[in-house]
Image 1 (cartoon, rainbow, N blue to C red):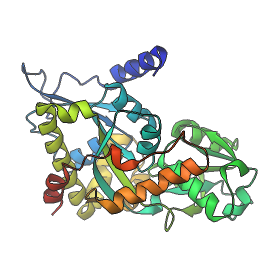
Image 2 (cartoon, one colour):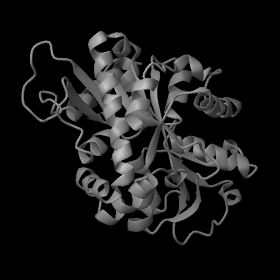
Image 3 (spheres, rainbow, N blue to C red):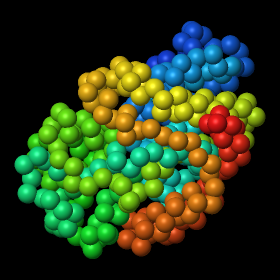
Length: 327
């Protein structure tokens, strides 16, 4: 990472951790020697679901939160040592691994693939993935949507070379999509629901039968090897697993908190949470194999350098605590 990129990243983190002097219960101050867990998050992510489930407070450690626009910049922060752990989709760890980043996948969950979508404007003449050939398609590079788009193109007999990818983060992609600058947009919820409800987007294809629906918590190896932070990570992952189980049974309550935390209208939050129910799963051979397929697909297209052995970036020591919490 260049000095300029690292400086910009740390500046962004400073802006995103204004509450760094508070513990997870919102109490000011930090006792001497108290462990601080620096957590990277995304829109409607871990902080929102923990708050909705009533599991955000009462920790024996301090949590500081940093918000990111998507998984790739979050994992850049993990690699740089600026964040200890954070939640991402199925593709960011592949890109981070390909770049030699210092990361370890420490927990997994699986959710509906319906929130993963390729959208077109309501009045678009595009009615099938085959018609994306030669078109401008917005997508966040290295995100879960990136693989969804690649898989859809492959299924349609196309390659990435057949389209004009526009690598944009969600906010910029939404602006380009709503203004007609791009022909299609590969994205995930809650942006999928927002685009459909507020901007009249039409679903071209979702991720059903195409993507694995996996998401991960990814940690810095140094954080895992630190005794105090490792205990904090175990507790944090336990709380997240419990919160996901709670959310699946309390969609209305979760949606209300989600709307409050993100500023999204209630109708968008209600639509999004229906697709965001996530079940904690063990990081087993099937998970690793599924992720290896993603890595191989990007490698075959020349979209990542070299080859990735996904198992080398996995640490399954938290499987047991997550499994117990999910039962």
